Structures are given as C-alpha cells and as structure tokens.
Length: 199
Image (tube, rainbow, N blue to C red; front, side, top):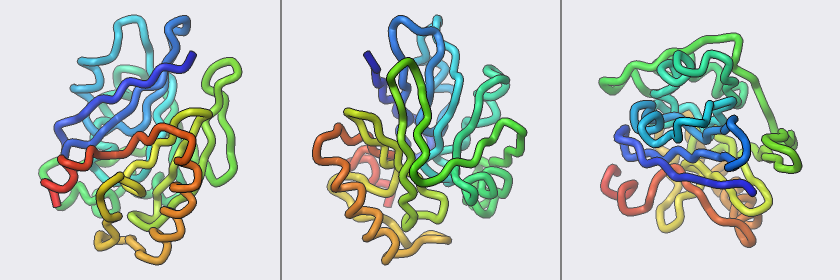
C-alpha cells in the first residue's frame, strides 16, 4: 500500500511529499525544497529513486543538488520549462533570494500531460499540466492523492503575479484540479496558514 509522508521545509515553508511502501526500499519525492529536512525525515532503509517537481520555483527545487549528491542514480521529472528553470537562477527566482539554485544533469527527464509512470507494482502516478502560477507547473495524482504544488492551495488564491504567471491559465488549471480532487486527498505545495503569512 502506498504511504505518503509530508515534510515541511524551511525554505518558505514549502511542502515535500515522500511516496513509499513499507515492503520496498526505493521511494519517490514530490518537490525538493529543503534537502536537510528531507534527509532528516527519510527512513534509513529508503533510497530516493525519483523526484517529481510540481514547478521550478526555488522553494520547491533548492534541495536538488544535495539530494542528487546523496542519491546519484535519482531521476528528476519535470516539464520542459521546468528543466529550463532548474538551470537558470532568474527563471527559478533564486537569483532574487539568498539561495541561488542552478542544476543541469542528464538525469532530468521531461514529462508532459497524459503520461503515466509506474512507481511500484500496480501503483502509478499520472501527469497533468497545470500552468498559471508558473509556466512549468505540473500536478500529479494517484488513485487516492493529488499533488498540486502551488497551482492549488486550499483556502488561498493562486498567485499569478510572479514571472510567467497567467491568471487565465491558472483558472483553467484550477478547475481541472478541483475536478480531480473530488475523490482524492489534496497534498499542496504549502499549508494555507504558512502560505498566507509569506504573501
């Protein structure tokens, strides 16, 4: 059975989610904002096999280099623009903070709408393109969970005022996410109380 563990990072209080099964030593991560916190909470028997990025903003990718150093065979899954943002401090916004992030590697895999990736036997993650908050935004969902990043944070408006934000796209994406959220547990990129305090 798929287990989900939320990890709250110190970089703008962004959430990462660990996806694992108790009978398997490989696990997956949704977003990688705070490598230290992730490594502190990662059970000793688990190795990170893949990281799925909800978008390319620095508070969701700043831990990439450290995690790849620890798990060099780990794959990074992101959109086409997300790959560009990983390697560009202005596109991932880290140039405007004290946490410059730039990562380019052969392990970055571009994914897009409609793809379905097997995590474990009979456990898949599905990809939905949800631009609006950022051009790179992806939403992931399994049978019982949906990982929305910053495209949908319950109780908060979608921020579209950052570079590559688009209010019209955000509204379309939000409706698609809400439809898929009806029968799933929502795992957002931030908790509402922390997100509101940041804005």
